[in-house]
Every structure is written in C-alpha cells, then in structure tokens.
Length: 83
Figure 1: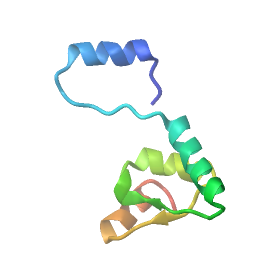
Figure 2 (figure 1 turned 45 degrees about the vertical axis):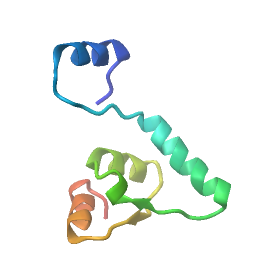
Figure 3 (figure 1 turned 90 degrees about the horizontal axis):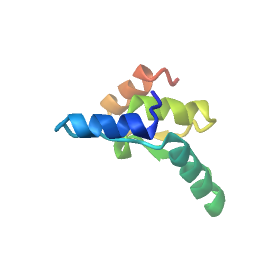
C-alpha cells in the first residue's frame, strides 16, 4: 500500500499507536547498491526485516537470495509467495 505523505501525517495525528513507514524504493536501491559496491551476490537476512510485503517486493525486483535461519522464516517466505 502506498500512501502520500499527507495521509501518513493524518494517521500520525489521529493515532497513538506506533506504526512503521517504509520507503520501498530506497530499500530496494540500498540492497542493489550494497551488492554492486562489494561485487558480491548478497543475501537478505529475513531476521532483519520479516515483513512479507517487503520480502516479496525484493523478490519481484529480482533479488531472490534470502537468509532464513529458522522454520518460521522459511514459512514467511512461503507466505509471501516466494519459492
């Protein structure tokens, strides 16, 4: 889900609940830049950000290397539709 900043500010003003705002384009860019700077095929640690929507977006952007260290993390990949 993509929201304009005005809607995010409205949510912020009307709730006391914590919430996260992710910049998906920046996450994908950072992941791409990190690997190309080091000249390696890097792996994304699911433990670092176990959000199925972000994992799926990385996969859809062509990054299919994930580091799963538990059955739950493998199940999260499956839930996100990542083989």
